[in-house]
Length: 150
Image (cartoon, rainbow, N blue to C red):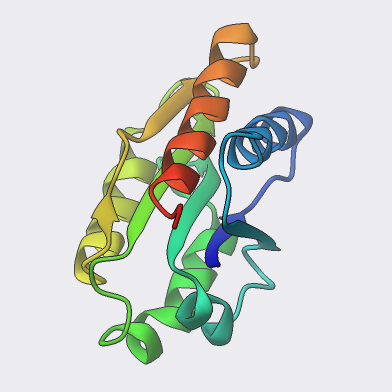
């Protein structure tokens, strides 16, 4: 069975709502053979990353950058995992009041350094989550989880 690690920082109701939509997608009944492990960014560990077969990352965009919590996650796991995780699939969603480009750019630099393979376009969501945003998050979760089906 494959493991999908969902690492998130969801301090607001909006980001929490998007996380729930992503998780619903990962648990679609048509997706089998995938265990989903959900970890807050401040609690995700090196063993979590090493034992996962793929990753989903979620963060608010804060001051033009990823959240400090997700940055801490990368600071913690980057070098210890660098040579062991190349080629693993990942997806990303961000939420901001008006701009997410800096957050996405910084995360893509780090995932590129880890040589993770982007399997879906990053979701850049702004404003209050609506039905379209929730559906896009659901599809992102399902897409990344489906890449891990055995």
